[in-house]
Amino acid sequence: MLRSEGRRPMPEEIPVPPWRRPKKAPPRMPLSQDRIVDTALGILDAEGLDALSMRRLAQELKTGHASLYAHVGNRDELLDLVFDLVLTEVEIPDPEPGRWAEQVKEMCRSLRRVFLAHRDVARIAIDRVPLGPNGIMGMERTLNLLRAGGLRDELAAYGGDLLSTFVTAEALEQSSRNSGAEQNQEQAGMFADQLHGYLKSLPPAQFPNLVHLAGPITSLDSDRRFELGLEIIIAGLVAGAGEGADDGDGADDRVRTAGSTPAGS
Amino acid sequence: MLRSEGRRPMPEEIPVPPWRRPKKAPPRMPLSQDRIVDTALGILDAEGLDALSMRRLAQELKTGHASLYAHVGNRDELLDLVFDLVLTEVEIPDPEPGRWAEQVKEMCRSLRRVFLAHRDVARIAIDRVPLGPNGIMGMERTLNLLRAGGLRDELAAYGGDLLSTFVTAEALEQSSRNSGAEQNQEQAGMFADQLHGYLKSLPPAQFPNLVHLAGPITSLDSDRRFELGLEIIIAGLVAGAGEGADDGDGADDRVRTAGSTPAGS
DNA sequence: ACCTGAACACCGTTCAAGT
DNA sequence: ACCTGAACACCGTTCAAGT
Image (tube, rainbow over the protein chains, first blue to last red):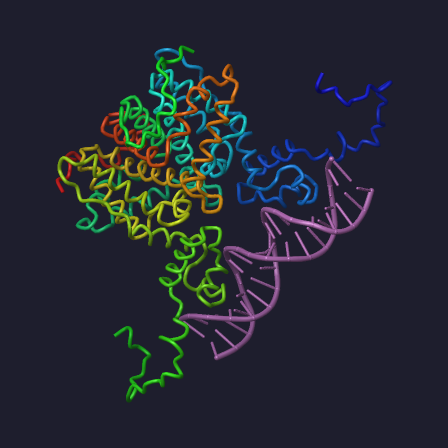
């Protein structure tokens, strides 16, 4: 219905002789926002955020860089769109009774996997509120899961933010650790070893704690850090942190519905 | 000794007539790393990170932009130095018995105040490990405070990271919320109102949780968010999250000293 | 309506040359 | 030893002009 609008029915499909159609499809697909955003993500994955300039992007699309501004406003808006596109890949489970904490972890691990799969997307995410269509959808599903754990409204509202901030920051630090020219696991370990040596070499009178904890500080790998942080935050959430705390400005009770029973599914 | 090298002793200090010395001191103070970093922080405070270019900085110092590279390596190293300078202002309390949680909060509030006092420093901090002299000093004092709470080594080592990441991310989101041209409290409230209206207008069948929580989501101001997050993380830490968890790779037991009793002071 | 070329006002970094 | 000018290889964004 919608798709056929403006597409006049042809009397017959006249095939284009193969020698007129060098390889495949129209030689220059028309520019569109989708094509721009897809290509931008491709550059990001392959070369990182610093390589994603409007000029580089235009070159990839075989057009002039000024042409992009007919479809995306500016670079910052482009990054918004790329971020929202990537959020498609995040899996947020429907609540199942008795598996709350595990499901929250699954959600966070999924977000982390997406960040690690797309170079520098964590850098884009860190100072952005995800208000695109997929971001909104993700917020809804996140709230649904968090409330299924019985969190009071304020904690559910803030908990999602805190968790996603945590995941983003942790992914950021992991990828910046691996930044200098495609560093592999090996080189990450080498840096840890160097740091360990440095901390151990500090004057123990002035730095007793750094010397004592040099081991634990440098031996925490990214996976362990992530799981530890996750446990800390979830433990804090179930503890119902700051229960009934009130800073006295009365601003946080705009909506105080009575029956906020946990959603079943 | 070192300072007088190459400075031939003058027979007498001949005073320069005042009309030859227009205002004060040598008209062009010699460039130094300290002067460069101080000036950089001044530009940051007044105009933000995007305004802090090597050229703008050189102009402020009345020199050519290429001259800076004799003292700082590159822009990224300059930002390292600015960050470390700012860390001077963070206050980390010496542990006092019975006040652990409150003191951890004081430390985090101090860090937050520093971020809010220096525009865009949170943006600099977010993807940097503070390994400058003040960063190392801060780590030592942080570990000292955290261990005073009786946290086991791994948790103390990671807890400081988690807390400072949290404070940084929260400061970042607060200042990016206020980004668009010196926005004051009023405009922040206006945005919250707009978002509240938007969330309330969503189709309730598809977005029941966003509609229900529109109030709590938009009424959390920065201070409340911060205190909430702080309570969640601290609660998670005292819960001793992931006690004895082991991912089986055996990499995190490089140093396993027996007597890790909490430090008294 | 969409795309282009050219221009504007910037960047960080390097390096030979000066003092 | 320190500083400079000039150059290199880039940026994002705007806009009049084309088709």
